[in-house]
Length: 296
Image 1 (tube, rainbow, N blue to C red):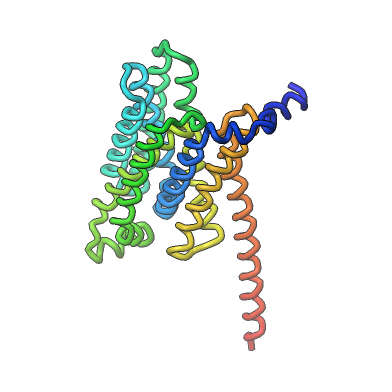
Image 2 (image 1 turned 180 degrees about the horizontal axis):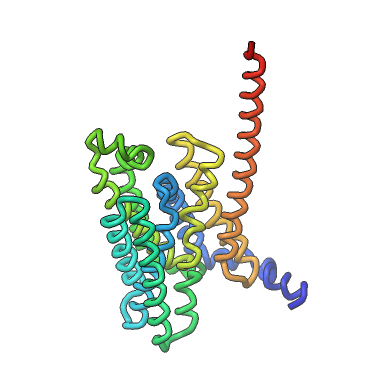
């Protein structure tokens, strides 16, 4: 492949950009909704040190979707069932970080193996199998947009209901337990909400790339902000920009949309990391200067 072929793959549809964009309007809305919810719930994922859990849940979600594809059941239903099973197991048995990582380490290869086995036995279209790994956001239909929005609205409502105890438990679990916060119930509810988000994300951007919308935006926001309101808002904005920006870039050519989404998300993280590092250096320098001035 030469430079001309690469340019054609990336920008070949630029002359018909408006028409193509009109055809994927559902995908833009789906990306915006998923980016919003993924960014918000990702803040708690980072605060609870559960980025590894997202990948573990996505593997069982992939397995559930693959088995559903094999037996002729709705793929979304299979994906949700797989995610909820993984989330329930991690939430119930993985109260401590060490236990949680061990459980996830066991679930991930099991889920991936079951998924690969189911896809190997599937005799349908290869595109259907491949989409479980990399997503199919450019082909979101109106009914799919409807259930995606409904699930994300349910997750948002659940987050609002448990927001304060969840935040307390995420930042200081010992104090939360001492104050009477039902930490086990809160953790279990959060894992179920996370499972729903991961199931939707797997269907849209694929099992391999789900962390780009659930982990990276929140990680970027936490590099530049620390406030209880500014971090979730900024993470949601980064999630929406990553998803929608990736789609808007992808429709200019013929390349898959997922690499664009992950690249935009990664660039945002790099910029935020650079800003955070520069701010930390300025703060340390200012503190050092103040200490030198006040030193007798």
